[in-house]
Amino acid sequence: MPHDPSPDAPVTLPTRRAAGCPFDPPAGLAELRERAPLIPMAYPDGHLGRLATGHATVRAILADPRFSSRYELMHYPFPGGPEGPLPPAPVGDMTGLDAPEHTRYRRLLMGRFTVRRMRLLTDRVREITAEQLDAMERRGPGADLVEAFARPVPALMICELLGVPFADRERFQGHADTIMSMDVSPEERYAAMAGLQEYMAELVAAQRAEPADDLLGDLARDSGLTDEELVGLGGFLLAAGLDTTANMIAHGTFALLSHPEQAEALRQDPELAPQAVEELMRYLTVAHTSVRTALEDVELDGRLIRAGESVTLSLEAANRDPARFADPDVLDLRRAATGHLGFGHGIHQCLGQQLARVELTVALPALLERFPTLRLAVPADEVPLRTDMNIYGVHRLPVTWDQEG
Image (cartoon, rainbow, N blue to C red; front, side, top):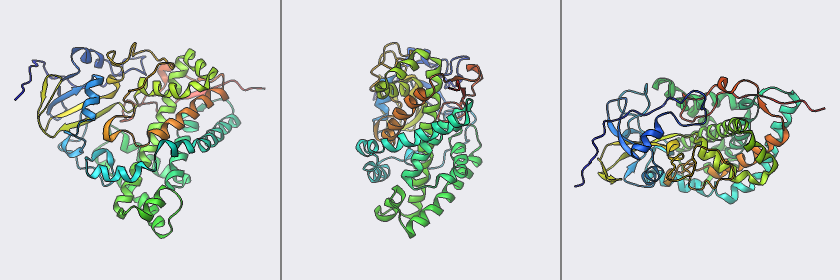
């Protein structure tokens, strides 16, 4: 039986970001990664597990079926979280499931989110992007980019794909925000989940009665899913499709405006967009942290992870690992950032990653081209950051530009 040779005292997960560094991981993660890519960690509930910060280590765990993604087996890594064991994943929440349950849902959806299918949507993404930019231009200089652009573009797309009325956005957006928050009470989170499920149940009932030509209609027609599964899966896809890409558009714009030479490179060469998106995904890593729990004893990096131990995976530290990326703290849109973990890895790699790529590849260059004088309307240190959310980014991004003519 391998033994753990580490004498390290357990650390706690760094969560505080350095002042004036809105794009960098929390201070302390780099130092811990230099110490070792896998170290003992004390969880807020008293559990002794591990923290993984090295790119190769995080990637290996994400790909290893000996590590479970089930919520009820994991320990929450952030302070102020729920006390006691987490409840199992709600029906349809693929993030908290292992094979074979996860595999069944994934197979149903994979064919509907292929690279080819998502690229066919490029023209529609361009139309939606242009409509939102037109609206911004009509209103004149000064906007919160989150509400004016970053949220509507992916929200309209996921609503169209699923068959959800965009007019209902306020009803479900609040529920999605609460579910993604790291500092709401368990009761508030469960109430938000129930609210989202109630909304989806109404849509599913309508789709069962008269299936439309959209994703929910397709699943209602011939997937074999129960109503409960369809409600849960629809809510999961809606919440996931709303939040992550919206934050990448907003936070990506913040990063570009804070690195004007990079913004200018993209403005001058829109063909750089696909490569730029991969670098922004690496550099920002808005989906910053994940957790897995060992189902059996596993030896990794010369250390023994015992069955039942939770491992917190710092995707943001892994994406800044100098062993994988040269000058990792530098934003370089011409970097070949392949292999980043911004979309995760393994069986839980983001199902909608190809749609997100299309949306980002279209939206960011179009925004910079339409408003060549786009700039922050407040000092950078006054931009409110989503340090309280599972998906990092900005709560608001006040911007302005010069009125032409």
